[in-house]
Amino acid sequence: MKTRLSLPVLLAGLFLTLALTGCATTHATTPEARASEDALSHILFDYDADAFTAYNMRNSGRVDITFARDVPDGLYSEMMEELRAHPDIRGVRSARTGPACGLF
Image (tube, rainbow, N blue to C red; front, side, top):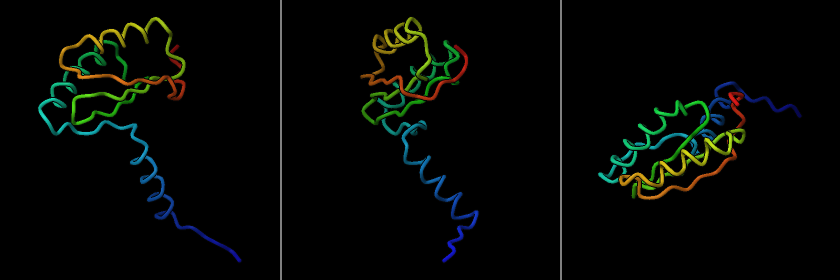
């Protein structure tokens, strides 16, 4: 028995998988989340970190951020200190489990 999947079915599956992974930014819907996302975006911009981070913003203003696994220890520590010290960011949960970005 031959099973044949069409391109639209494969693309829909890929889209659903990517949508459920939590790697993309969610839109801030509360004042706390908007303030936190604004602070986070400024910090990420200062480090030009788009290539080696992905984050999810919680409505509470907490941030879940994933760094590429090859980010140097010093850079990771420096960014985490800045994120945790910012008064508009209510909390940070981080991981260094993202794909290697090749910049380091």
